[in-house]
Length: 424
Image 1 (cartoon, rainbow, N blue to C red):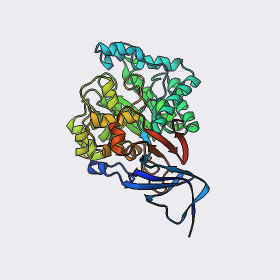
Image 2: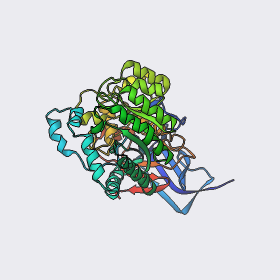
Image 3: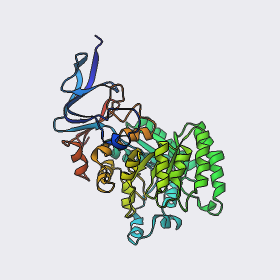
Image 4: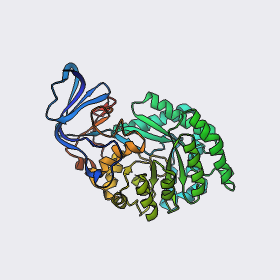
């Protein structure tokens, strides 16, 4: 018999949510199948999971004096949470905009007046690499404390100032090298039309296609390319050109689609073959049906809708009914969703999107992993996968989401290492 030595054992788990199943995004009724085990136990060897089951370990797994044993009585254990849409790296903050929001000024109107994204662009240009790094590191620490073990992070606050775009991407790379949380980079120079290209936006699109995308690809600075396809920002045709060029250069396309108006972003996501389309508050019936047919993942961002004081939320129930895999994320950014709290987003999934707790945990684990192309490594608790595990100080999944606005995290394990425990 070949023995394995456990480095961590989590035992007496009241409710163990494994998400065991196929390594792909779950859809429709599959989103409610979470692989729940009562009185569970999980064993880790170094950075990999070696056993997930009930009651006791098999005979071939040994516990030694060096094994860390954690008692999870009356606790919930899940895969590490994944925040798959964030704008992690930026300069400054935008709390001064709260007065405009109270007056009812719309998001795009603030931006067109030189605020919004444009203000953050100026602050990000002025910030040093070290300032951006330290600011993002603080936010990353908060995310980890909420149970997040993997994050997607976008550029997008440099626009036509390519050096600032690169500065953001390099901060992301260095954070990924140094921080326990894994970070996946997305290139988003197509976040807004720069002021000097207001009357000639096609020229900026050409610069992105011919100069920026090739450089980012050749230097390996991003895995994905994103574009803000929206009225007053990038048109469907401009977005098509950018994402097609990105695919040609080996970057995987994502899209901010139909956040405010039914422009046709969902349809474009299906046409291009985007791995995910995000926001989708204004997505059309045709677009959603096309996404379902092509297997495009829907990443929904309810705290953004909430913070923008909009009464209309993305129709998660319809998407699930159509067979679209759904993901929830914070959209952490300084203007429209300034929160690092993915647990709060999960609660909003019930309160505002009418999703079931089982659908919600699926959305922030295996479905989110698939939206980042990491479904074979993370997103579920199964033998051979990375040991990304969260212990929540709650008795069950329902309580985690029901008792909202509270950090329920007890312990975070990332790649087999305890990185957060008992508020430390």
